[in-house]
Amino acid sequence: MSRPDGRGWDNRTDMTKHRVVVGLSGGVDSAVTAHLLKQQGHEVVGIFMKNWEDDDDSEYCSSNIDFVDAAAVADVLGIEIEHVNFAAEYKDRVFAEFLREYQAGRTPNPDVLCNAEIKFKAFLDHAMRLGAEKIATGHYARVRQNPGTGLFELLKGLDPAKDQSYFLHRLNQAQLSKTLFPVGELRKTEVRRIAAEIGLPNAKKKDSTGICFIGERPFRDFLNRYIQKEPGPILDDRGRKLGRHVGLSFYTLGQRQGLGIGGVKEKGAQRGGGDHAPWFVARKELEANTLRVVQGHDHPWLLSHRLTAQDASWVAGRPPALGLLGAKTRYRQQDAACTLLAAQGDAFSLQFPDAQWAVTPGQSAVLYDGEVCLGGGVIATVDG
Image (cartoon, rainbow, N blue to C red; front, top):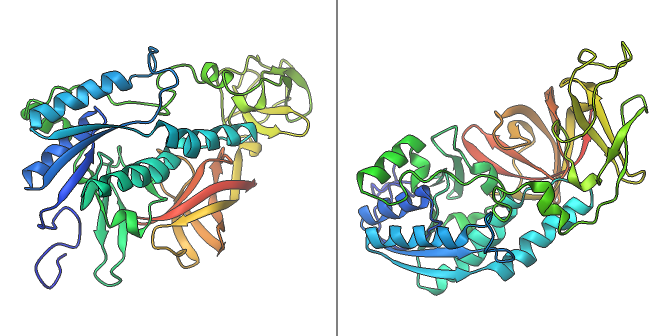
């Protein structure tokens, strides 16, 4: 698709040369992003974002190592790199909200907030002060400008196994108009091939996993440092006490591991499985400080057809028309068919013809029209 002047409607094929500031994380995706942009003739500058420093010298927080890797990439590519500390902004805008949500019994997704508040706000503002015309990151997503409406659209990355549009759904028109996602046009295998071909030092570096400020450390150990434990009973769906939990904040709906309970020997006492069917967290009763668990993956308490979401953010600046769409209620799931029933103010409600498993308050419900990510909100309530 092209414009009347022959130039492309998407960021990949726009032949205008820009001063582009790239977020270099030390990983292979952002490294190849910088290489591709330089190859296209853009003036490329790298920035390494330091977002966490509470325990930066520990085995779990690798920002110092990541900066060394990012600097090595910049050296190979022949571009400048600047080390910028956004730790204060991160703590105020992302981490404080993360703790508030956990203390309220919900399960937040800090990567969504980090993208909206740090990578595409604090970082974008800093890049503009450096004279950037565009910013770029190594996210697997795409941006295009719709020729009919003139609006910028957020698209899924072409590699379905790596698509990160779910985490970027809060980006707005102003942010998308300044953003490039070069590796969104590629599969991960191709990104690694390019990195090896041009001799990047991090070509084989493994992908980072988990929440950025937690890294590879045990999640419960990390949360222990910030949230007070309030133990209470673990009950099943019939009200039988099976044990004690260490604090509701330390569990999430659908969780199977780390419950510290065994099976129920009473025959016929469970639904959805045999006497030794696994247990799953199904409900958190805050007022009673009670954790409810059920046996069997498909227990009715784990399935829901409706949800309401709040704090909605729409890529186009307004909600889509009511009707049939696709939705993800967690990352790494196929789009589920749904109906957008209502969208007023910063709230919306969805209905699913097929029951969704372990839909979790605090997580994001993200809406799609095919490959176009429309936006989403934070799941507030769930109905069976």
